[in-house]
Image (cartoon, rainbow, N blue to C red; front, side):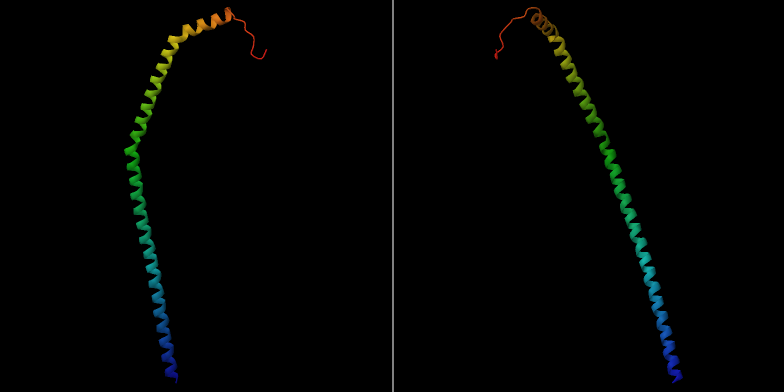
Length: 111
């Protein structure tokens, strides 16, 4: 009987060792999978950052050219406005002077 009990204890001990080894193996596989996943995430992130930088560099000149075009349009509009001002300045001043020096009295519509 005692040899049967010892055999059972020995078998139980071997089973516990097998279970412990399986747990260690599973733990190592999980760590390995985590490390592989993190490596893949880092590679993907680096790839997307490189794509973003390339996109920004490709389109950075576009913003500058749009800004320069807008400045040119503003300058031409200002020149246009200043030209109209210079053309009509004397006639507006004459109209204002005439209106103040020669009043034309009229009754108000409510009077």
